[in-house]
Image (cartoon, rainbow, N blue to C red; front, top):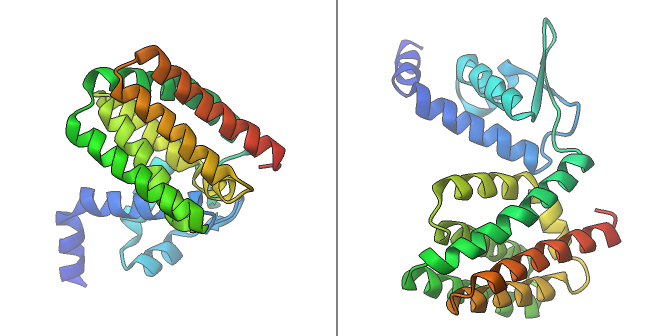
Length: 221
């Protein structure tokens, strides 16, 4: 027991970060449902850690709005509401356009090659209906574009927003021809970035997010 406590003390920040990431990911992926109680002891036992890093992680998640801590009762999941999702996509509409615009100025040849490769693989899996792979590659394309913007702040904000809508993105990409259309929209963004056409890149990114919003509404997501 003493050895475990010493290890946890020495790894305090990295351990807390790992616990935070795990709980956060489980909330966003629907493992823990809205209003579900999160018990420190149970979470600690599940992850093989003491209650201290779990408590710290829950406090951090409360600041993020994903958890509510009720005095003398404990923590429960707040999660992402329908309004939160709508807000996120409206904010993404603006920031994804900015990301694409800045990418025309800062993107490297290596990043362009990676984006091209990602699109090639996405097109391949979309034709075969491999939606799990399409989702992963879709995420990868956006991450590459965020990095290409040359702004670590914009990258951080958009990456977080992308994670917040994990579940709805997985469902959306599996509806009708959304994976095919999304890939074509990504292609348009990439071509505009290649051309270093900032206005066109921003417009294509805006169109992509608006198409996603429209698809979500049509399918009641």
